[in-house]
Image: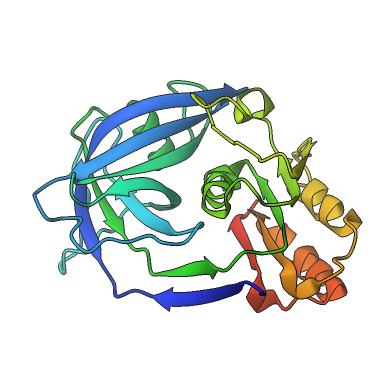
Length: 264
C-alpha cells in the first residue's frame, strides 16, 4: 500500500529553557557538531510538546555567549537572532529536549551568536524555544526511499532512518565534511540499513548542494513512483533541481520533503 504524508499544524508555543548539558559530537576542520540538552527553566515549560515527524524543527533564541539573558520586546517575545534546529530527542516527563547544532568557526571564534552560545555558554544559560509550527508525518511503509542531505540535514536524516526502520531499501546521499564521524554511534550515529546504498559526496564551497542535486538526478527513475519516498534537504539552491527531478520521476512534490535548510 502506498505511503502517505500528512501535514499537521500546531498552535504557537513559546518555552523558556536553560542549557543543561553540552557534548561535542564531531569536528571537521573549523566546524563542529555540538549536542545541546535544553531543560525546563520552570516545571511544565515543555507540557504539550510533540515532534512526531522526522524533520520536525524548532526556533531557538539565546542571549550572549557569556550567559546573558534573552532580549524580549514589550509583549515578552524574544527579539534576538533565531536559529532553526531539528529535534533530536525529548522527554516531556523529564523536561528536556536535545538539539544537534552545527557550529561554524574555530573554538573561541565561532560564527554567529548561536554558534558561540552553543560552544561556550555556561550551563544554566537561558534560551527561548518556539515551535514546532507543524509536523510532516510519514505513514505506511514506502517501497523504497531516497534520503539526500548535507551537513545541516544530518540530524533529520538520522531521525528518518530510525523512524523508517531496518528493512528499508533505496539510496542515502550525503554531502558532508563529517565522513569520519558519520557512522560512529558515539559521534553522529548514522546507521544505514543493509538495503540502503550509501554515497558520500564531497562539498564544493562555491556550489553548496550541487553534488546532491547532481547525484539525485543521476539516480534511476522509480519503477513505482507512488512507492518512492524522497527527503532532500540542504542549501536553498537544492530545492529547484530536486523538484525538477521529482517531476521527471512522476512524484508529486507534496509526497516528498524538499527544503532549503540554509542560504549561502
